[in-house]
Amino acid sequence: MKKRSLIPETRVKNPEPKKKDGNWIIWAAWADRITFEEIQKKTGKNESEVIKIMRRNLKPSSFRLWRKRVHNTSIKHRKKFKFLRKKMREKIKISDIY
Image 1: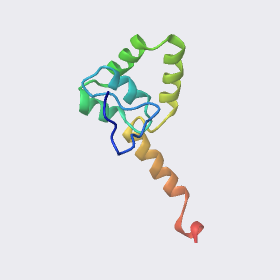
Image 2 (image 1 turned 60 degrees about the horizontal axis):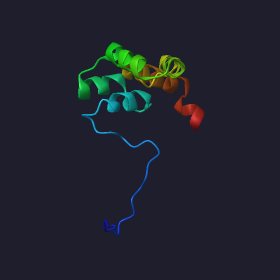
Image 3 (image 1 turned 135 degrees about the vertical axis):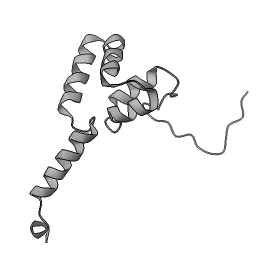
């Protein structure tokens, strides 16, 4: 019987898989906080290759949901995210806050 640790184990609903595993790309593509640029830096797969991997490994309905979500989400592309963030800051002026 395996000895239990005194430190409690935190369980996550969708834990991060190992980076060497092919499931990491799918996990990272679903995660909103990970951009396509980061995926390319860590795995060498660009956006179109990630889309192909997702198309192969997901059910058609799941793939359509993911594409719709990624297409509408500005967070998956760093340039879009920065542009929209800058636009939001221009709308909110310091005089409006105070």
